[in-house]
Length: 392
Image 1 (cartoon, rainbow, N blue to C red):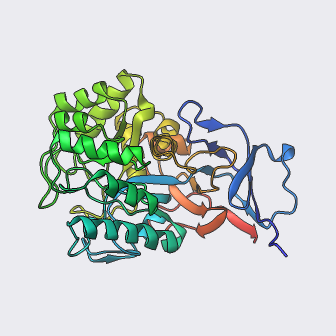
Image 2 (image 1 turned 30 degrees about the vertical axis):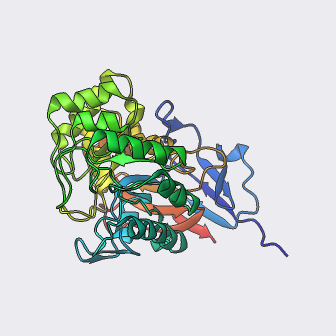
């Protein structure tokens, strides 16, 4: 006999953020998910909420799609040798992040740089995070760093094995535009999405990747356009924003002034849907469990962006740029949510106003695929109100 459907009902929601930059706030107080996928939302009186296997009373807090970190460097499991730290992914979940995207497993001790070895490691990394999700967090990994000598058949082999990402172009031996473009085109032909290191060197072996190389390579995402750590000159950042239509990835571990320049340029171009967020951690700056929330608050408060729009940078924009089935309130999308409220005693009349003043919200619960994964966050400031599981 088949298992009965799992039905999640979240009621008494005070505010629903959609992740959709064109319509960031939804009307309603309830959301329903069946078997881990969003099925309906709106006002409870209009929805089928019967026979819920899990029921949550949101107690008036805000619900948003789970946050997405577009730029991480995982290794294995929930451990990073870069900072000798355990459970960094679980800590990130406590910051409202439910999906992590690898920009290359570059901190693996003894990382192979020969073609056979780098392909083997990428396939293995894709597998081990597919088979093991730390604290339920979705880790999209297995992102090989391209090296000289790779041919088209190597990218087909990677794609056939399930690899969907390239690590940052420029972290390996390929640092010139023509070679990068050739390999990026091969990757794209087989459905592999690419990103590029932008700015000065970050680790030994990496190098300066300037605007000319970025534009010639033509990757799908301009990785850490605000530097990781060192940003390009202002005129090159503006040039990148104006000269292509790719994702403009702003990271926590970068230059905040350059982040604001990128945001302001995107706004002038009326292309803020291109802005996506990452942390670029673990790295020399450490692990940032609250990095995405901090970027949202920083860009909202210093960049004069309504908070409901800034939240889209951290979920829906990334979902669309990365072609994910999470990060948006949409039928059939994964039931990945963060429930949060204004932090206790934080200034501002509402959670949105508080964020616009630069304050972090308090995370009260995360849900992934319709399953509660964490409750009161151990990392954010305490929320004014907390949702409660009343059934399930």
